[in-house]
Image 1 (cartoon, rainbow, N blue to C red):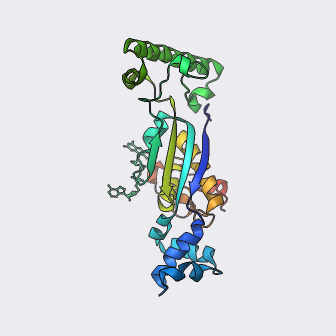
Image 2: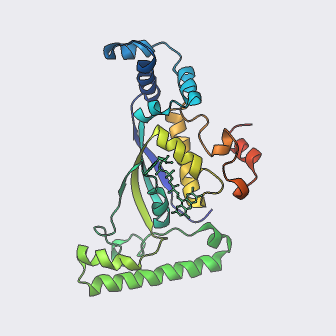
Image 3: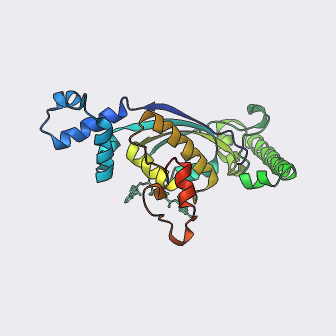
Length: 245
Ligand SMILES: Cc1cc2nc3c(=O)[nH]c(=O)nc-3n(C[C@H](O)[C@H](O)[C@H](O)COP(=O)(O)OP(=O)(O)OC[C@H]3O[C@@H](n4cnc5c(N)ncnc54)[C@H](O)[C@@H]3O)c2cc1C
């Protein structure tokens, strides 16, 4: 694994997520009035009901619950990938408003992620990478100064910052989108940084809504690998890693 300071927190989620889903679904299948919905699911086996909804593919019901994560220590490269998920909501720390000059950073440099392949090459390679980041810092600082400092200078000085630069994100996804996100991003074919993030997010939501995410993860957990010729060929290994035999 590369050098990252990845931190993921589940900041908030819909209260009683599985009960909320059960209430929405119960309305579809029974003559319940809205005022009676909470009562109509009380004491019933919500787990079995939700498992059935997932099996039937009645997935609009799980859109009623959403999860908000605080994420830091990830690269701008990861940002480009995660923001492709259009059914999610994002707030990202701005490089226009937040400066990255040497004296604004705790360690005298913008934070960055070292990719695992570079890390695996050993200390010399990591040192070379760090020196390059330091050079970029000098370029950035130089442009901030030449452009007059402050917010307007950050806006254009940031053009020299690399994909490795760290960012902070708040992201909200509903349960249906999250299951789809895990299908794509927990797959061995996903890039290592977003895969690691997705796995950590999955662990967090499994605690909050275990039935909804019981079989969540790469698609090969529940069916054939969709990757065709590009398949990693490690389905049995992957299933085991996600706790399925
Ligand atoms: C291994 C891997 C490699 C990738 N490589 C590349 C690459 O080389 N280049 C690249 O550009 N991207 C790449 N991507 C990103 C990919 O193309 C998707 O943009 C990203 O995974 C988001 O998927 P999505 O559109 O299904 O998800 P979301 O945007 O979260 O959408 C969820 C689902 O909602 C539905 N949906 C959303 N919007 C629409 C719409 N406008 N019309 C109809 N249905 C909609 C679809 O069913 C979609 O699957 C890669 C992704 C992975 C996992």
